[in-house]
Length: 198
Ligand SMILES: [Zn+2]
Image 1 (cartoon, rainbow, N blue to C red):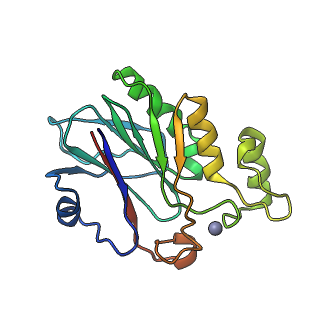
Image 2: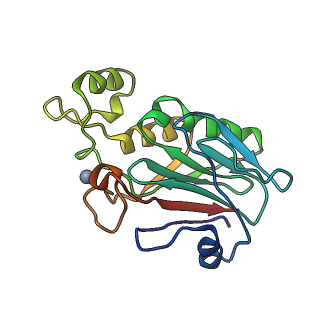
């Protein structure tokens, strides 16, 4: 059974501390750039990839996504797991469908996604022009024209379900809930993590 967890602001997230927390000895991070590159992780190459999704079929490797308003998404299946960094740019860049495609390529099926703490659809206001442009392509993200706040969680849920993935949404808003880091609230903020292992 894959294991997945999300930390709060009060859980240290250095590699040694995550090893202690999870009892895993091989934990992998990624250099996140709001893109759609999916890095497949195995025992051979232990360098930190520049990517916004990590995928593995190797048991015992912990895949980490760091976030502070963007959506951390952990996707599990019997043979493949993934950690995805999916903010506005990642979702609109197609990181979700790219990840699920890669997982299928590697033999995965019956996917379950957990969406972790992220900024909610009431708090994520963007410029009106950007709002209209994005909801024209991703109508699931629409909230109201008055506020032009994007609901990235609903956009991601739509993309995941369209790719045949069952979704559970954690629901906590990082900006409203002081248990979590929020870039929008704190500017200079730390990052909580989502971690998954097969
Ligand atoms: Zn909120």
